[in-house]
Length: 84
Image 1: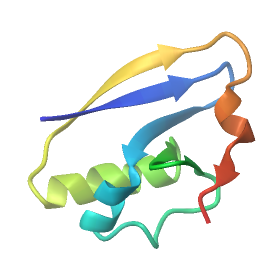
Image 2 (image 1 turned 135 degrees about the vertical axis):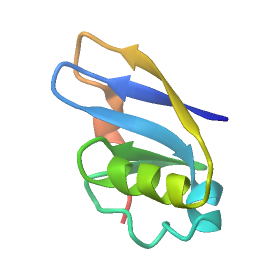
Image 3 (image 1 turned 90 degrees about the vertical axis):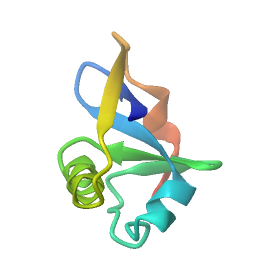
């Protein structure tokens, strides 16, 4: 079981995924600029890119689990570089 962290603020959410995993499952070129990146991680936007990731993981027979970290203020993730 793969466990990923969901980061949320009062308006939105993103899931932290290693970029190498996105390459391994052939999604690295399908992620939109609504997601962010920093160092070795992508932060997939919850409405557009996360469903794509979940669907691909299911296709590959890989279970996913999420743990949530919520912030009551604007997330610093919004200052990261867009994925593309």
